[in-house]
Image 1 (cartoon, rainbow, N blue to C red):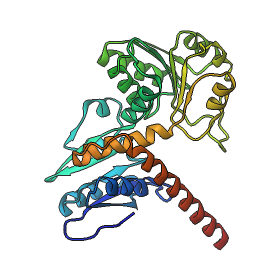
Image 2 (image 1 turned 120 degrees about the horizontal axis):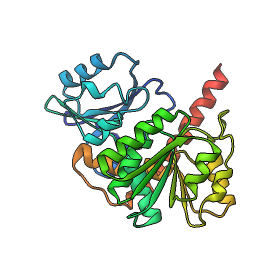
Image 3 (image 1 turned 180 degrees about the vertical axis):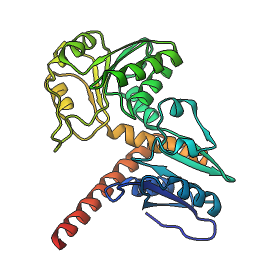
Length: 302
């Protein structure tokens, strides 16, 4: 990656708390290079509760903007001058651009996963989708899938009230049929038998995680051509079970990479071709390797 630095270089921050494990800045910089954009993304720690001071600094220094990870995706919304309706509905923004002192935000998690699913599954018109989880990515993913033509959305979550809110918001805004229930074997089995697509939106089943699904037996109720997509990657218990059942699968890598194309278009008005995803995937692999080596060095110095 060639780093540019002159009076025209646009400075963009990747913010979060913590931020040291994030590989997003490395990936963003690779995308800027591919698009021949004179910009650099730098990861910085922004403590929860200090967003007002940070956004004021962005305005005063006339920075291009910033990209957001936890815990700021919701807290940023009241500080924005503009925000797209879907991101506001589901209270999740992960990219902000500064246009002459006006901060404009958008959430691209849904677009990233929706694009990846459409590439894998083709036309989604009339499909029924089961969302596992009702956190910050589930609503935006459901919204994007509705815009791609799905006709019914089931939401299952450990907290039924959150599932209800997500389902009702999707139904009210997009006019599709919805259902919701607890993340139990009984509800999941019923929803799975009707689903054409399942999207796993929780942290359950992630490699190394102590939190797992109580049971994945509901997946036996899925039809043989149902795509099982997960926001996590490379592998989870959910994806492993889907593979064992002979079901088509999609991990969260496609969601992350497709977001990069959407991010470049949002921030700079440049639409990159899909073939750039190959370079983005290579860049992500490099970023993860460098992060792991850094962690090993830190461990050796401890």
